[in-house]
Amino acid sequence: VYKRQINNLSGGGTVNKNSTGSLTLTGDNSGYNGQFNINGGTAYFTKNSDTDYISGTTSVAQGAVLDYMANADDTLNNISGEGLLIKNGDAVLNVNGQNSNAFDINMQINSGKLNYTAAENGNITIGSNVIPSVSFGSQNTNASLQLNNGTYTLESELVNSLGNNIIFDSAEIKLAADNYTDGNYTIQNSVINLINDGLAETKTFNLSLIHI
Image (cartoon, rainbow, N blue to C red):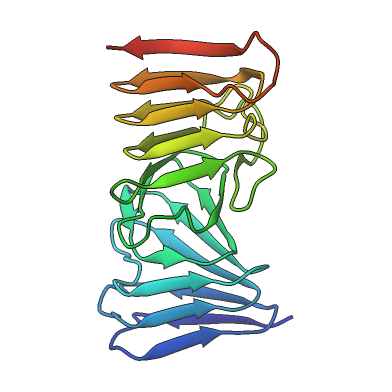
């Protein structure tokens, strides 16, 4: 399996990462405003004080992976596809859905915080058994997922949410399952709606804090 590295990518056009090997982006890639297609394998990027991800558009195909190590706070715009975004590192990674009314990509949070802001009026379904999905890499890592704006339907508890944190801010939350007891849920300026879908009459929801 091949391993490749690109340093200080710039310009426009299209870069296609094909096959099952790995590709690592290093240095300052902010000067690249084109289309980066991860069609297979894994692309790696580590955000430090002296490195930057591309300013263009990233597409992650089904079965492909973007592994994003955030050692410094960063914002990832213009990402889509049916692949997987893995968030590593202790810093905050902001992911914006401003270019689509869909939650486009599967996300796995191994450490630190992933802060997702939906597109305006976005309606997003998340859980462990839906596509796209959101999960934590392991339990009790104190990793965090924050979901802002939009309407979020929770089909189920998130995988490995025990000991991890799920935060809603300025959002509408629709509960579609019976129990949400594994994660630490924080509700800020948000509304909770219980969906009448024939499930159990009693729903359990572990709230760590409610801001009104």
